[in-house]
Length: 84
Image (tube, rainbow, N blue to C red; front, side):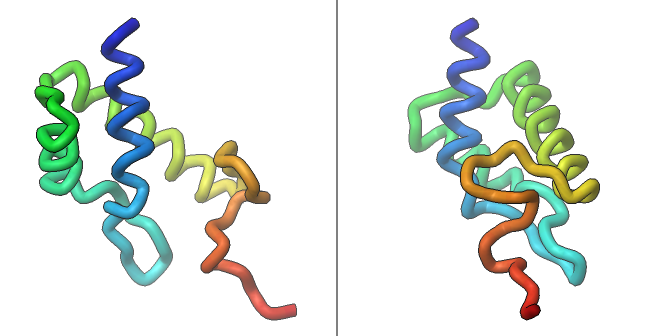
C-alpha cells in the first residue's frame, strides 16, 4: 500500500512535467519525474515506475476520449478551452 501512496505523491508533484506535442500532452518527462522522486526522498524502483506509467497511460487514454477524472474539468485542461 505504501508504494501506491508514494506513486500518488510523485504524481501530484509532477503535473507540470508533461512533454507536449502538436496535439497536447504526449507523456511525462521521466528524467524530471525521477528528479522529483529524489527531491521527495523516494527511490524510483521498477515497481514505482510501472505505477507512474499506469497512471500516465490512464490519464492520456481518458484525455484522448474527452473524459478526465481530474478535479474541476470536463476532460480538457483549462488552457485547452476553445472559443465559442
